[in-house]
Every structure is written in C-alpha cells, then in structure tokens.
Amino acid sequence: MKTAVIYYSYEGNCALIAELIKDALGADLIELQTVDDKKRQGISKYFWGGRQVIMKKTPPLKPYTLNTEAYDLIIIGTPVWAASPAPALNTFLEEQRISNKRIALFCCHAGGKGKVFDKIKSKLPGNTFAGEIDFINPAKQRREEISDKLNEWLRQQGLMPRL
Image (tube, rainbow, N blue to C red; front, side, top):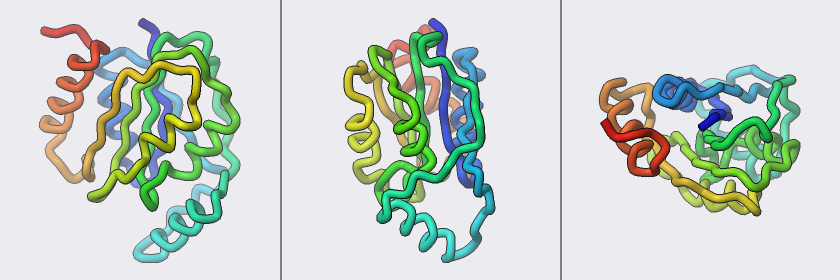
C-alpha cells in the first residue's frame, strides 16, 4: 500500500509523529511549510495563531510536490490551534481536491483536540476515514512510548501488520 504522510508542524511535534509513521510504514513525507516561516515566541504565538484561525486565514505555502492519485493511503497531521487545524493545513485542503482515498488523521496539542478531526473531515468529502489519533506534546515525552502508542494504533486501524 503506497502511503503519504502530509503534515504541518510549528514546533516539531507533528514532524516527530510524521517521521515515526514514515519509519513504520515506509511512507513518503510531504511537509507543508508557510511562506512566512517566522516562529513567534511566548504568548504572542497564541494571539497570532488564534487570530489566524478566527479570521479563517489560509497562508500561502511554499511549493511542494504531491500527486494524490499515486497513493492508496493518505495520513494527514496538524497541530491544534484554537480547537482547529493549523491554517497551513486549511490552505492545503483548499488547494488539493482529495477524493476516493483512504485517509487517516493525527493531531498534536497541549491538552485539547477540540473538534479538529471533524473540521478536517468536513473538508474531505468522498473519502474513507481509516482512523484518527491525537498526541499531547509528543516531543516532550519518551520517544519509545510515543512510538509504541502510534504503532499499536496503526495495527488497530489495519494500516500496519501485526507482529
């Protein structure tokens, strides 16, 4: 099964999960990066990010290469911003018209995923969803524990063979 992991990562949490999925499934990685890649710090990042979500911003992305038709499974990952997907992911979902695919979702957050998965699914009609999983600050946890949790989920969803 040809798999793509498409993700946006602001602080490295989603990048960690995407890399673990790549290693587990032999997937291709497509990292979404915004043209404005300035990292805000402290409390200002929350105001900036929350404003982007509330104003429904779709920031321009740096060029990436993706042919969704080449994949059987597409795994999409995002940080949670104000109970929503990061605006960069919304840009991607508006640019790409993905249909008739098997899709799995993951998100990373600091304690609340909100309705992030419902919001993503609403932008991907005509697809089959293979499952969803969330992680709380995975970069601050033991890599082995995160990897074990992820691998078990992949097996449960039928995305990775049982050992």
